[in-house]
Length: 408
Image (cartoon, rainbow, N blue to C red; front, side):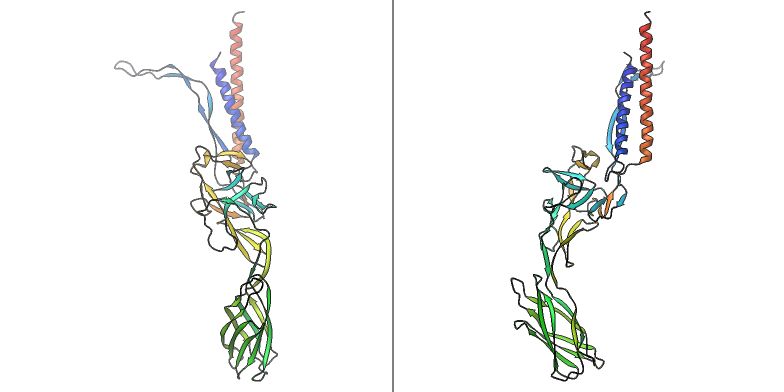
């Protein structure tokens, strides 16, 4: 049998594999986070007809004589170049700019991906929108405002959908006017609203009493258990020159709430003019209880906050990012996932923005890095290679036919 026949078959197989890779690249040109693959060919074993000879004093050396026995696929490897970022308008769509990978749990095993289109499932877990796999990171205990301990093991990230959060009043700004028409000894009571640590609203009555031409005192008069008093001094233009808190406003907590203690009371916006008295709270930092309305993921760091209807936000966790020494050694597992391979190295898990893992872009997905021009060029090359190999088989067949016909 002619060697050329088997050589042509090896070329057909190699170019068919080349076509398969090109087809896969083109098919995934619009797949988020997809990485194109490239093919490297190698020649196969060559039959040695003559080893050649070394030069002598009388004769020159002779090169070896070899006939190649075809072609094979050397390797097929993904190209981990950065894909273009495409804006999606969803804050829970995430892309990485750098060498890192998002981490998912699938059936007790960790998988890695360049794509993170997330949503919150019915159980409150952050999951991939298309596969349902839970993304991995570090959960922050509810109520903790400190830094997240990224030395802990990673795990599923959950959002406390039934959580409510409130904030007690500790700072207050009071504005308005105390009428200069009031005589010394006359008073003006005003009711102000504050919140305790459980978000319950409390009414607080403060009575302002004129004690001199330009001086007033104030005293918390209701509820009876509340405390707080101070003085205000005005200049001849009716502006505050000194507002002194003698005792902080304190309201005992009820129904399990902590005491309300106002440690920062600002009365510099109060005036003393010849108009009616009118005092009100212009701003305060207390908030009624609020429910979870949304989740936000910080760009760059991947820290996760839940947002509440009262404007508060709570840090609940941080995404974990993996980096591999040799990402080309990862094994594709479908669904935009990779698993660690024998030659990928172990995942180096940490936070975004550190260790070369890249930063997170919120509201974007990474597009496929397939270059259409390159792939269509490769398609032509593979097609022509396949055609040439087919012609070689036809030529070898004609030669065999001639040999068979020699005996006629």
